[in-house]
Image 1 (cartoon, rainbow, N blue to C red):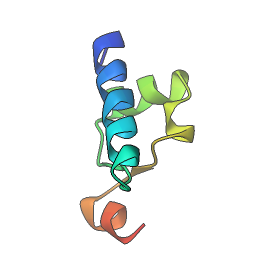
Image 2 (image 1 turned 60 degrees about the vertical axis):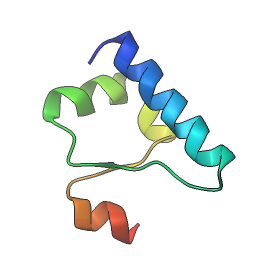
Image 3 (image 1 turned 180 degrees about the horizontal axis):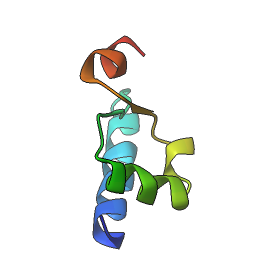
Length: 57
């Protein structure tokens, strides 16, 4: 996960919001989760340990 990945997630978040939806991440790898925590993206895009958890949120 680098800045391109972060920018892609931000763009997807904005696209989902503009259509009345929400973006949630399911089971991100530990490296991806650490990166998005460092940049504060978990405050905007919730991360869940499983797909079932993400869908239930």
